Image 1: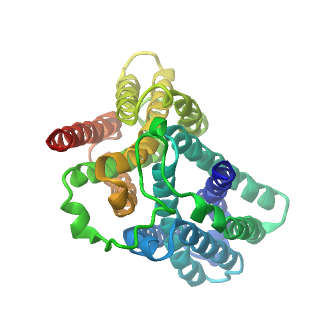
Image 2: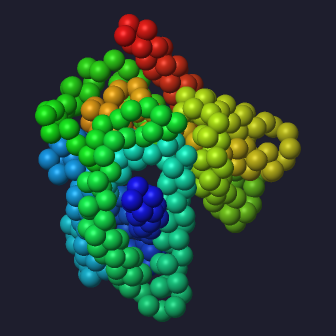
Image 3: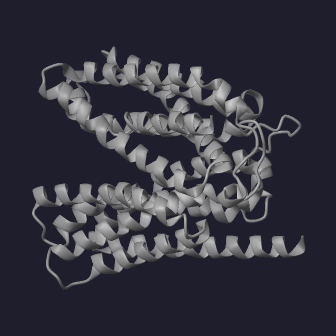
Length: 403
C-alpha cells in the first residue's frame, strides 16, 4: 500500500511542476492580447508568490486539522480551478484575481507533500520526487508551446494543464484511504522514527511563526532555505546575461546554454537519489555545496574562453541537485516529527522570500556596479548558507549530547 501511495505522490510531483514555467512561455503572446506592458508578468508572479508564502505559513495549522492527504487534494483542486480561470480570462485583472488561489494552492501542497515525504520515506525518494517536479516543469512549456504553434492559443494551453490537474485531484481523492493507512514513519534504514497518520498529531497546538523561531537551530535552517532559493533563482535568471555582457558569449547561444543549468539540477537529482543510499543528508548537502563552490569558481575563471562559464553553470546546477531535497528531508531529524510540518511551512515561506528578493537585488548591482560580480554575489550567498548549515549541525550535536 505504501508503494501505491508513493506512486501517487510521484505523479503529483510531475503534475505540480507542469504549471510553474507556463506563464513565462505564454506571456509573449498574452501581454499583447491584454494590452499591458511586458513587465506586468512580474505582478502576476508576485501575487502567486505572496499566496504561496501565506499558505506555507498556515500549513501547520491546516495539516493538524485536515491531514496531509486532504490538504494536498484541496490545494491541487485550487490550482486546477485557478488554471481554468486563467484560460477564460479576458482582462489582466482577471489573471491577478485567479493568481490568488493559485498561489495559495501551490504553497499548501508544496509544504504538505514535502513534509509527508520527509516523514515517511527515505531520502532517495525526496531527491527523485523533486527530479519528477523538474520533469513536469520542463514539460509544461512544451504543452503551451504545442498549443501556440498549433494555433490553439494560450487559453487552450492553460485549459489542457487544468484538465491534468483535475485528473490529479481525482487521483488524490481516491487515494485518501492510503494516506490514512500509512501509519508509522520511515523504517530504521530510512532515517529514524517519525510520527503516525499522515503527519497529524491532534493533541498538539500549532506552533506559529514565533514558536518555530524559538526552536534552537530553526533560524539557521530558515536562512539556509532563503539562501538556497536566492542562489538558484539568481543563477537561473542572470546566467545568460552574465555570459553575454561579461564573457562575450553570443546571445542565442547563451540562452540555450542557460537552460542546461536546470537540466543539471534535474539530472543531478536523479543521480543523487542513488547517492543518498550511501551518504546521509548532511553529507549530501555538503557535497552539493562543494559542487556549487567549484562551479562558481570555474564560472569566474578568466581562462577557457566562452566554455568556462558554461561548465561552471552546469556544475552549479549539479550542486543544487542534492542540496534542496536533502535540506527538506533532514528537517524531521533536526526538529522532531511533531514540529516538522511547522518548520517546513516556514522553510517554504523563507524560500520564496529568497526567490523574490535575491534576483532583483543582483539586478540592481548589475545595473549600477557591474554584472561581472555575478560569481561574487553567488559566492557570498553560498558562504552564508554553508555557515548556517554548520551552525545547525553544531546545535543539533549539542542537543543530542544532552539527551
